[in-house]
Image 1: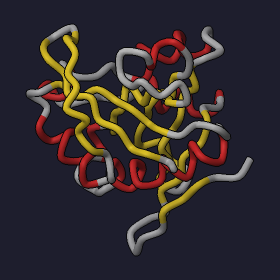
Image 2 (image 1 turned 30 degrees about the vertical axis):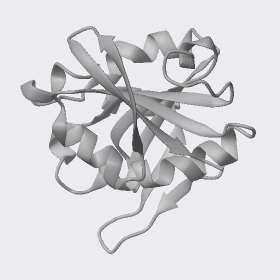
Image 3 (image 1 turned 60 degrees about the vertical axis):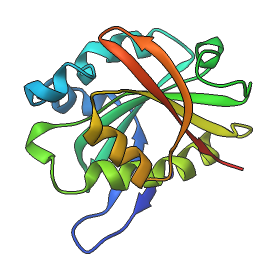
Length: 168
């Protein structure tokens, strides 16, 4: 399997579909309390992803070490987020507490478009929802090329902004 990477002086960040060898590191992930209310830990969503053919768990690797995680979700689930039938939803994004502040999340998001284009031919847009109180995550996504669509939806803990990244 080919990895998509974004190389910097610090470390290469790659995206890889989940493999069993990643499980122990993902199960050990921790998030600061202020972030934990906005997203699920990898261990919480991994089983759902492995039992749903429309969910694709993606591991963010620094070298060979799992440092982050997200899920790409296809199908009808994208309808509340986009009118584009060729959209894919990015959800459950997190970077392990021990690896935060090193730019891994931003580099992963900048690599996401190439990863999706390679592995999901025909997908034209990546969409995501970010809680209106999660300013740090919103800035990260916007710095990575996502734009606020102006759409909002009610999430489990408040209003969410819908962001989009065009792959066309």
